[in-house]
Length: 252
Image 1 (spheres, rainbow, N blue to C red):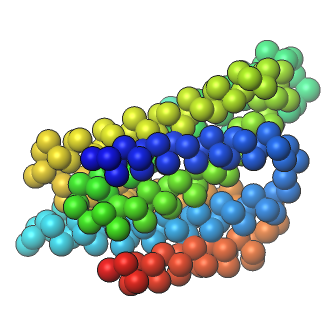
Image 2 (cartoon, helix red, strand yellow):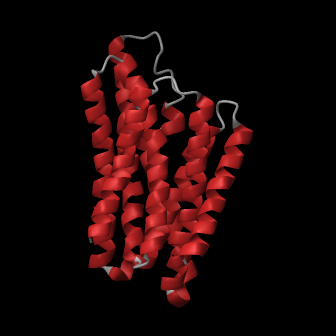
Image 3 (tube, helix red, strand yellow):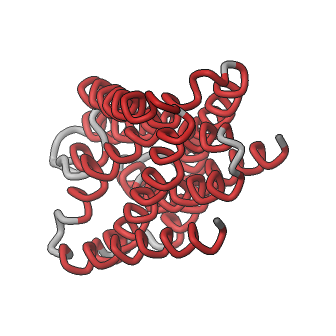
């Protein structure tokens, strides 16, 4: 249990680390952030397949593949529904947040952007917690590490828009910290859910894997390919994916 709690703090704390970097380097280039986010996307993609979906098939027995496919689509559809209510990174980060509208309008757009990140952090945190439900601690750490890596650039990108919209630095950092706290809550929810009802573990693993694949495909890849760094972003994704493959073999 202590590993789960420490992992929850680490996953949520990664957003705070990103926020600190965002304060220190307010004008990071798109190319740098795209490379970092692409690397995280590769890690998350491998973690979803190796740490969540394949174990889901294994634990599901003779119905494993059916449960896994159902769980993957259920996870993706759940985030798709959330996106319809509150769009996320590539839909809002590319929006005209710093347009010439009123200060209140700009602030409203920025806070919608931050709210979207907070809402999306919940299922990502649940994915980290569910990983521990399988009993494979090394795999769970790999999954949590991939999500934490993704949270660093996510924490970075919310700082500058809030400061530009007139939010005080102290309040900006507090809001960023709250988005990370959502992930802590999600991690604990995921862990306790699969431990209370272990029968749902195969579906929960696939569901978490589906949410991670959805995030990679629908949000991270479009965002990293939107600023002219497609080639570097692609290779960064491959490096992240292969690093996870090697880690899985070494820790397996």
